[in-house]
Image (cartoon, rainbow, N blue to C red; front, side, top):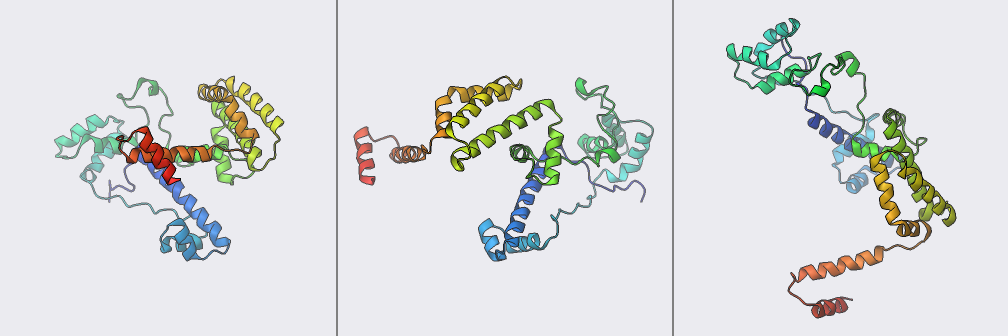
Length: 293
């Protein structure tokens, strides 16, 4: 049928980010199920441990690759009966969604201008007149569908931050490629290098004692100097904050002690205080702490 849509209207940037975050979460669950299944763990145990439905675990465990969600067929809208006119006007060079919407209204279209803008957004080859001035005059704002479809989207920000602090030798090929794409930006390359150095320093101290105390302090001082002069404002601010807590940071790297017990007792004390809704004096609070001990 002429003028019939073959695909859905493009999603907003916010919707696309939400969808990508959801995919990364499902991909993480799939990889964890695969790891447990290969290790010989029963499916019912995997379902209980990961709080997943048994059917989902069974699908993930027996899938040869990550099961992508199927594309939805476009539903009918009030715009469908006007597609022939829209396609003809676009072929004539009209890319103004407001003009097209007024023309459709004259033909009896009862929908909103937003519907026309959404339809037009994936067919416009140059910036709209209402676009911000910084985008005007750029010939490659909207590349052709053939070129844009070949570019793999980057992972979500949280997932990408995790990848940047991992060793490049342990990353899968797809994740390593995403990291290399990000590192094409000069600031991102500097941040990734410093973040990995700091991660190696922290992991190599108390957890596995791969770095002795003297080497850890020397590496921390060198890292703080380099991060404070890297030219990336966010990283320089982070380094300045670490310098203010220099003694605490060095202690965390060079001693086996933790303030977790202290923080736990403080949290317990605050809980008791809040349970009395501020009506108790210090003597009663002290008595409750001693009796609870």
